[in-house]
Length: 450
Image 1: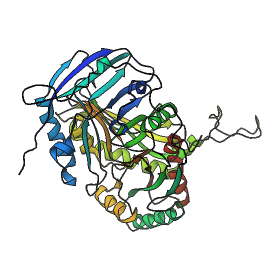
Image 2 (image 1 turned 60 degrees about the vertical axis):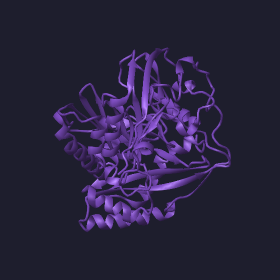
Image 3 (image 1 turned 135 degrees about the horizontal axis):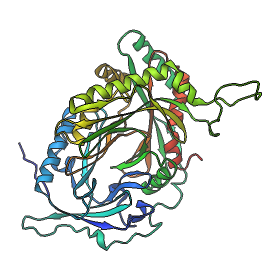
Image 4 (image 1 turned 90 degrees about the vertical axis):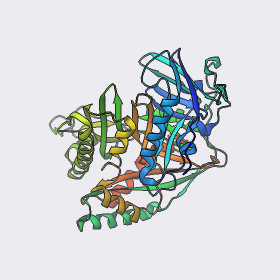
């Protein structure tokens, strides 16, 4: 057996001025394939270049071991790295970004990557981290020298998205999707599963390379309340925080239950009062909080996360009722869980323990995963898998890779993904419509919708 050789890294984090737009820090010559991102409402992390990779240095593990292999590689890398951190916040020092496959049978298992430069900011404080590779004698193999880089506003991604983009059917054409849903309902009614989450893909083909930074800028501008991410060409804006670990506190946001959002403002009066007005615009949020199908789907997802987090928390707070999360295109039922960490699990360990949740797989998970493989007709890759970052302390954020697409190696095309939870009360045509709404985020990023 060949023992992987870890790179020797030297890391330095320096304070920097806050930026109105983190993406302005990206140099014009940065390789788009190496750009990484985890940004929400102006704060977060971006990076570029490649200093280390768990897949490249630890080899490609078997599917079931993809998380443990990456976690082991990270622990060893942290132990061998020299770090000088003058800021000392979550996300400073040595940081890795990661994205992992939904299924252990995927051809793209994912892993962790360490950029050569990371820029971050939170709560009015900002920093830049350089990651340099050392030779056996401690000399530099690479030098990032980010402290010499000055932001150039508009240097990257300010133009329109790729011209000439056309959408083509994925593994299952849209008109055939209701038949897939009906088949899933048949399995549910037969008692094989309580819930299954099914996804479909659409292929966006461009006449010229699709620019990563343009996609990220457009996503952060329109979907500021989500986490805009990029890792190895997986790009999106997820509203779902799988797990956050920070200073011993564990948090998770569960989303399940979706309804299209009316573009008009929500009415101040949500019940009919004929004696006051002839007509009242219905509020779609009322559908979410009263619809049995949506509430059932949400309850499955919350229970799934609570059961998997409980062994790692001294106490776990689970609200009795969800709230309605408002996004530009949809409303979601949402529940925020929190607890105090009870063991030394890192944020990556917790993400691995939670995956797959009922929100992206179903209940029971093993049976739902089998049904997904049988009905979807595609390899999800890293769609619906954990995506995020962790630092040397193990703290970090891991979301679920939703509202996203996978950019091809040549950047000439992109697979877009969307799905929904199926229970016995699901309506096949409504489920197709839900996927179209969820595809809106990436269509917008590609310049295909307003």
